Each structure stands twice: as structure tokens, then as C-alpha cells.
Image (cartoon, rainbow, N blue to C red; front, side, top):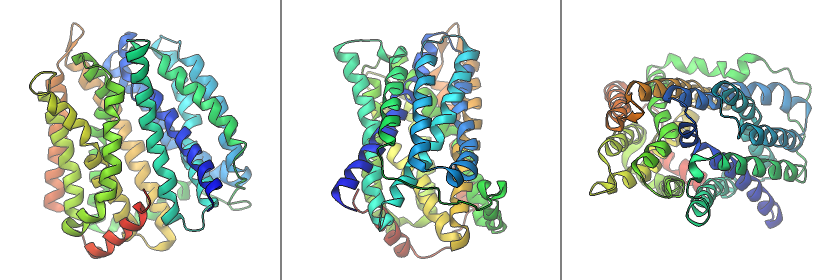
Length: 415
């Protein structure tokens, strides 16, 4: 992959995640400002999870059989940008939730399409893709920093406003136009019949016959429920406390994600699969306990540590889980198995969490004042129970720690 292609793909990845980071983090604060209840905020975020469940059908059964990836991506981003821009000024719950459902239905398929465009241009994806993908994380970070810059220099209430949504809309239109300039990536499954079962990863269900893999899948689903609390309500919580520059400060979570990704091979050799997964789960318990007890006074360190724990929370559980799944699945069902895990976590688990979390926030809101201490203790307790169950029931029967560390080292090399 020459330098020119690397630069073009890196810019593509940067824009792809700049768009998501621009609106997703601050949405809860904006919705709370326009009068949405906790459950309405949860249901709004649920639209992203519904789209995550539906998008594989679009990509697998339509986009990857009939159209070039970069053209589909261009059209989806242009349409999505228009939907997001006009949705930004809607304040009624029903129409805005519907508008964001349509927006997410255009955005979520592009996550797979940017990967398809990238892989098509690479001779060695295992080594080259991480160098491109890291620009997505940088894009998310820059989006948060731009919002905070706007807050400090121009518009103090930017996180409560619809401006981040409009920023994402404009970036989406730019990305849509840029997509048409990307290298041609023809459909990979022309003439091939793709079944619903293949899209859902049904082949991977045979892995569920093994007790430990079944426990891993079950815990992956359950741990994704408290995860939704963080994505949906952290920005609103920190703004309620009076913290300034929240969007920018939350990017410390993505920064730690990159750092812990680089360190994962070192940890893997020393801990192995089970302990890595367990540490990831326990990090959620600690994070939410810190949020429950944090403040802008003596315990401000708890808030910042809770944000920084994102690297452990995400990398140790979700990335380790992807590696574990890849090791357990035979070559012919690996893609199916990864799709199945993604469906279980980002679709079903986070979807349940979005709805559940919103109702918890409502239950502990009196006269508009949220009891954040109790709210955060609930996902902390939920994650603790899941971690205990996992510790008592899961047994790793896959390959050695050293082999796994080599796999991870190969995956993160170049980040």
C-alpha cells in the first residue's frame, strides 16, 4: 500500500468517525435540554442499536452484491447528512426519534463499507489496517476537541444545542462527496445467494454447543447492557455536575483506548483470556462506582479516572472477545462468528441497555433533579454480578497466552 493510498484511506477513516463522534457523545445533553425524559433519551439512542441490527442485511444482501462500496457509501452519507441537518432543529420527541432512526439506517452500514474499501487496497490487512483504523479514533477525538474549542471560544452552551448534530451533518456531506473519489471497490458477492442465516451468523451457533463459548456469548450480551449507560448518559451527567469542556475531556477515553491497545500483548501473556475478560468487566464496576462518588471537588479524580478507564473497559473485554472468538471458530465460520458477536453486543445488548438505562434515569429523577449516585450504582451492581458469574463459570480452553499475544501484536502493530 503506497503512501498516497494510505493517506486517502486515513482521511476516509478520520471523517467516518469524526461524524459519529460529533453528535453521539453530546446528544443526551442536547435532548435533556429540550425536555426529553430519561426514557426518551434512551429510546433515541436505541435507534442506533436498531440500525446496527439492520445494517448487516443491507450490506450483505444488497450493497455487497450489486453496487461498488464507495458509491453506496457516498450516497448514504449524502442522504444521511441531509436527514441529520433537518432533524437537528426538531424538538418533538416522536419526529426527532424517527429522524434519527432514518439517519442511523444510513450511517451504520457505512461502518462495514469503509472497512471493505480499506481491505480491497491492502496487500496485508493484518498489518496495514490498524494504521488506517487508528485515524478513525483520532477523528472521534478531534470531534470532541472541536466541540470544546467552540464552547470555550464562541458558544458556551454548544453541548446543549443542536450545533454538534449540524456539525456531523456537514461532515457527512463532505464524506459523501469524498467517497466518490475513493478507489473503486466492486461488489464482492456478485451472483452469490446470501441468506438471512448467513447475515445473522447462524453458522456460528454451532460454537454455542461448547459451554465456555456459550457463557462468553451470554456475558457479552449482559455486559453490553450497563455499557449503554456510559454512552447515553455520561455527557449529560458531567454537564449536570457543572464540568466545563466535557466533550473534549471525554476524548481521554479514546486516547486511553489507543494506549491500552498497544499494551494488550504484554497484558495477554501475563493474564490470558479469562483474566483479560474479567478485568474488562470489573473495570465497568469501578468506573460506575467512581462516577457515583465523583464530584468537582476533592473527588474530581474519580470522574477523570472513570473516563480514562474506557481503554480497559473496551479493549480488555471487546477486543479480547473478538480475538477469543476468532480462535474458537474454524476458518469457514470466522466472519460469521464475528458478525454474530457484533449483533449480540452492539445490537441486542446495547439496545436493551438503552431502553433499560433511560427508564432507570426516569425512576430516579424527582422534580427534574437526577439522583446520579443511585443511577450509577445500578449498572455497577449489574456489571459486578455478571463478572462474578463469569469468574465462576468460564474456562478458557483455547490456545496459549503466547500465541494469543502474537495475534494481538500483529493486529495492533503500526498503531
